[in-house]
Amino acid sequence: MSKQHWLVSGALVLLCGGVLVLFTDVETSLVRWVNCGPLSTAGERQSRICR
Image 1 (spheres, one colour):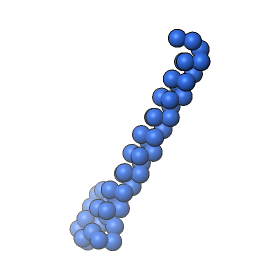
Image 2 (cartoon, one colour; image 1 turned 180 degrees about the vertical axis):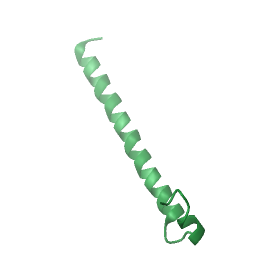
Image 3 (cartoon, rainbow, N blue to C red; image 1 turned 135 degrees about the vertical axis):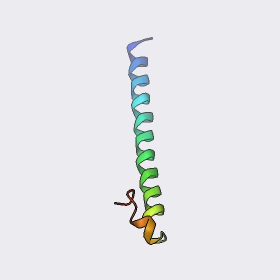
Image 4 (spheres, rainbow, N blue to C red; image 1 turned 30 degrees about the horizontal axis):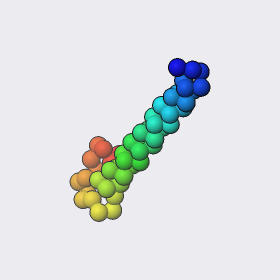
């Protein structure tokens, strides 16, 4: 492969990795909000996960 192909492949790998990290962070925040948010019980809000 030429140098340009390697650069494009590297850029795509970085882009895909960044998207995965972003979605993982968003998903973690959403799950924590659902589990520890205003609709959760008092016991769930006092759990180790919510602190």
